Image (cartoon, rainbow, N blue to C red; front, side, top):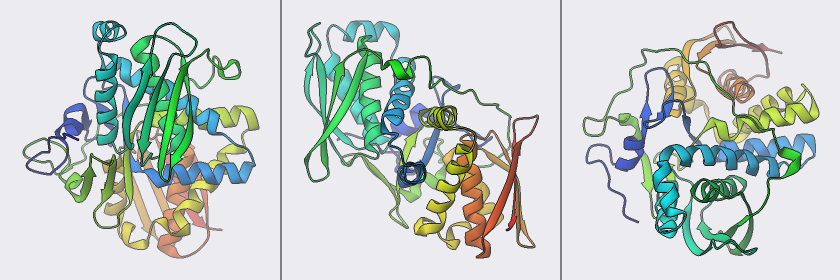
Length: 353
């Protein structure tokens, strides 16, 4: 796959051309600064949802697909101008679909190949994508159906089947919106504060210099940390925050604790290590590079963790992340108390149980 790399940091130029790492802990789309993005460990997201399903005993795959679908629809409609979408809905749809698959691969979401596309107003209208190394199959399905809907203006839903080890066929078909999710899974808006974080910048592309520590394999649709081999993905919190809200609407307020516990379990069961978070500055940098917000205050002293996160997202996941980090650092079970203050900051206190 053709991916022009920055000669300074080795990151695909399209990544830093389309996205900006701001000094307030946010990653945003350059064309639509209101659209927030995250650069995050893919296995953390997949593992979080596995743990949630195990704790509540329910399959939530269809909710994840729908949330991703709606987020991708918004992303593509902002990325591709209306006139272009109108033209390609009649001609050039295959080429634009291939271009979007290339962008998806650069973002670490897997390597997709268009195998079949039929949009002629008939019952078997569809797009079929063969994908290797999908980062998270429910999300990949929503990516394809949401992208198709944005390009054609026609509602679509996707399903998947394994066609060989590690390779899947995702088929998005034109259909009506599922009634049980109609009017739900609404996008969440985030408070935003200015910040003064200093990320060392690449002199050539302007992206964070630390992106050079990742391996960008556009041919396979994989981004990995060179030191640990952990897989990363560029995606939006708007893809998953509505899932948390939907679960809370369906199952009650106790789901907030479920989400926190699912994330804590993932952190403490071997994915992270103490070496990842040796000092307070490591945590500040961890959050900023991933677009999780500005960790304005962080104090690790006397077996306590105190934190204030400006511009937070996915609050319960962040509480669980900090709780897990506490348990790794101090080697003991912790309990977390938190609140969203009047400024929209996430304030967390973790201490021994």
